[in-house]
Length: 498
RNA sequence: GGUCCGUUCGUCUAGGGGUUAGGACACGUCCCUUUCACGGAUGAAACACGGGUUCGAUUCCCGUACGGACUACCA
Image 1 (cartoon, rainbow, N blue to C red):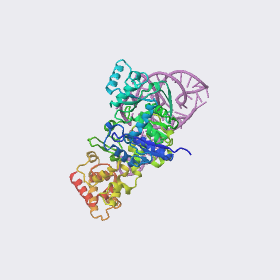
Image 2: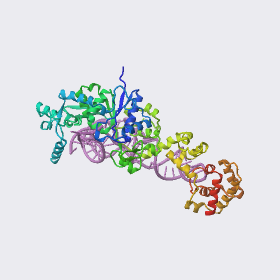
Image 3: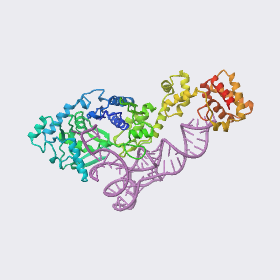
Image 4: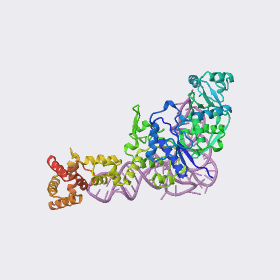
């Protein structure tokens, strides 16, 4: 039997889920669905200092909004529970102890202050400090201290960390599914902390132990993890799990729209666009805008994000989640970072907005109007806006008579013919019972014909009189929606004031 | 500084030893239209550089440059 694919999305609850994290989750999900595997959600909350209230709920609701379904993990449970790392301390303790017993890890008693001092010292001499095979023999740890001293320190409750004893000379190589073979020498890796002095594991230990225990087959994560991947390979080796080690795929980064570097919250504020799926309002007052609240449809975000770093190799641009599942493959993910271009996201939103039915849009955004009218309004504006809420704004404006008139249009189009035509048209409207776009149009045409004035001479002036501006959707339909009384009042006002 | 990763139009990208280097966004022009959008058509726009290998390199190899990530008892 072939092994079932199991992937995981493993965010830290340190704040709102960043858009790059959403894409990572999406790619994991797509692979799982494509290959009939399982998608896990694990919360990596081993840093108590960075824990943010509400972040976990935010992650869950973001994934839910986007339709990225979790098969196993936080929120749904499963055979490897618990899926919150803070609840798995005993497990990490046990595995750290195993490494200690086998001499593959050691206790270190150096304080942060001592290490900082050491770093400064090295730096002043132009080199970088590394806690490694070269320096560990001169530092305070269970390799340099006698067994009695170590026992005494432990018994006295002195704080300590557990570090991996990285082999001095070992070639590490692993095949990244996106970047192919990556080679690193163990001498460039330092003795990373596995267990912190607070008794919780670091990311490195926890992620390797959990991925192994949870039988993860593919680790799909951001490129920022690439440099520590060799360390993880070393860890799998130390545990004797190399044969079942998951395959790695390091995703290209999402870059700032201008210049270079990782996309950040700051770029979003500068550019006036969101980088978080949902709006974020932290208890401490931190706020950020979200794609959902800005009016981006979930289909937009999914499609847009999927195409930032991946491409099906065809010329098709529009992909539903289902279509993505079918088309997705790890091989087609690019190596280089992708700049975040909000323009493309807006275009996608326009496309998906037009794909939505008039009925659903009316029901969702125009509840203030009776359904018949709401539908007419949707048809009027659907193809002219980027975000659905703009339809609401436009609709409201429709029922407010203009306060002023566009001066340029007045100068160009408000002439005697126009005035004469509009005055006659207004009189004709008074006796018009069927106030429909069609009837209005006929009335206008007949009126102007009898006056010997061409339609084109009057249309812009009429639009100006009704709306105050020279541009907009079909005037006849607008008049129908505004209604007879409203239109006549507006014509009167324009005739009097202009 | 060190380690690792990357580099096709402004942006997202397709492609890959011989192509008019294709598409999409944005931009220009034209058409449609009562205007503005939509839509349609069309235009401008790219293989970082230098060496190899080869009959031939944008494609393969090596350098260089540039960019990025990482370099915590953070993930």
